[in-house]
Image (cartoon, rainbow, N blue to C red; front, side):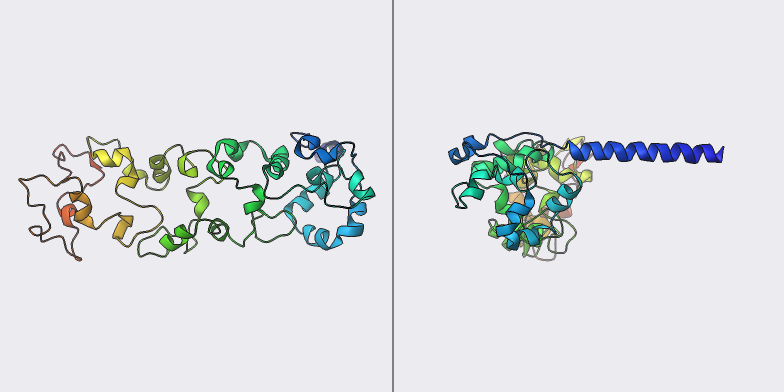
Length: 305
């Protein structure tokens, strides 16, 4: 019985190897490119399908490229019919005959993004074409490095995701250095915890709305509540700023002064000169209205419990 199991296992392993070998031989990109549409100079060019031909001139770039994820992936599953280099750079027969920059695709152009999307379209990048980055001419190579390994993951152009994003979003880096901030600089989360750089939602959020994004960590604030605080239900950003604040709890203004931006009616000792809890050592209004986000207590109509 034991021998029969080993025979079956050996047969299954052999079948798997054959299957993998077949997939390697027939690997294709998901979405073939019309290279002439990207650059008319490609007209009449054919695929050389020989990496060593490229190496005769480009060894200086191909050597660091060998350490990247693309190189390791293509070593196991090379693209069929185009060759490793030409799957991204297009048919190079005309370039081999006349090695000029005529067939170059500008890294800052949307054409370069089209090259990447032939394999990387769909999934988290499903909304890329309708997203803010695409609309503002941010291309794949603005954030990703294909030819050299510069980060531990993500093929980023900088060592970390934050440093990559801060190339354009310097104001977010400044906010992250304020007194109250999400633990990004401590390494407990990063930009991708809240944002999908390839998405199309407002703010490139990982969820459809700001509140849904916040609730991925702050589920206790979700509700539903018997007594709701209307600004909370509308948007967390009514009271909080996500990237950093010099007020505690990421508030947009100091404690009770934030409440007074809406609750400035009479008949209540809620003006700063009367409310003695509006000081650096108290919570102001929330000393009494403790359930700021909402209450399920039968007597919590004023969010006091």
